[in-house]
Length: 442
Image (cartoon, rainbow, N blue to C red; front, side, top):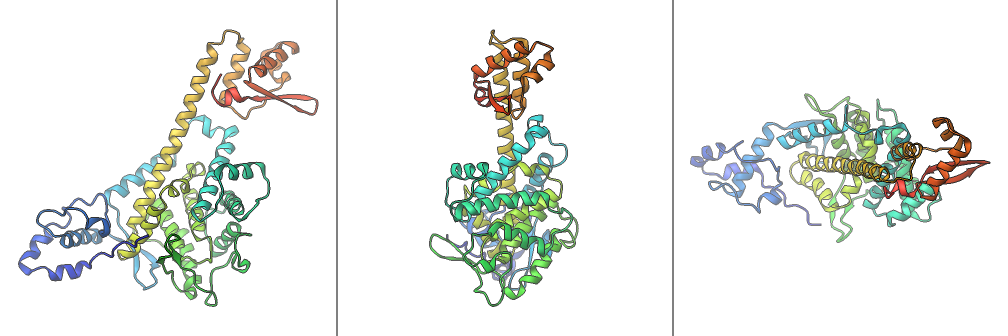
């Protein structure tokens, strides 16, 4: 990956402008459209306003950004400079959208929030996140094989499968963590879960690097370019303590720090410090989930951000590099992550809409089946909306007040039509929604 070109120093740009032109340049501060919040590496390829050079255009934008910048307390780069962020309109609009859709009274159907189906949806999302988060860091296995392993409970066959299983276990662990405080011990425990039996150096599992270790660096796997050199190992214990205080809300920035912004900065902070020999990206993304669930964004139990990050890993990496090369401006990373969150919400909404439509289509089809009696229609309607429900001949008999033979005939007829499938549990026959209902193909 090509490292983005470092922006010109705006003070140096201003010093190079003739005195009689300075007032003209300063008049442009705050006037240029900065809605896209472009990095210099992109901006220099565009046409500037007619009365400005590229460098002058950059200087006016940079001054406008810094006028409204907010410093993140205690979070400094390895050269001692503080990280900061801005709140352009696109950020404010995005966090409002996420608040509306992922927290509080979100208009989800009973198909997702119903207690019978909730675990199924949560498990599916955790599986997706476990697989794609691991694949982002090199796990080499297909989704089909990984899903089969996680659902069947079989032991992993190789390091890639083990990485995915660890990630799945860690995501389950996050749902049970104390939402009040994050501590270094919790972070180390999470890292241990994520890296168990996947690291060559077993002594590095669940601990930060020390001065005696060869300090890890971040490389581009394609051409071995060094993308990031993290802070010295001697600083890691203190930095980890500060990061946990930030995550728990003890420190932040002057004024209100929106919880979504806090969660995204936490994601960046762990990845920037890169305290572990391996598993830093997975740990960073896991902490992001912890932070979002801590603040009541309950819908994140159903979302997978890594599945979207994996589709454009270069953009994910570039959002880190934009921040580092432009004086620790976190806004680039924040803007990108907000876009990913919104896309994840779109994916979930589309999935819900598709499932709702499948149920409506199936209900419409069975209404056209003249051979179904009213008892069978009632059962099918219930099964479509409760796909994990089980039925017995006795439960069907009691529900409709019919003879045992009639109830048995109803269920066996539906089984013959693959709307139900039957299994023996001891001496009892247990019926569950069959392939025809599961696929919406009646």
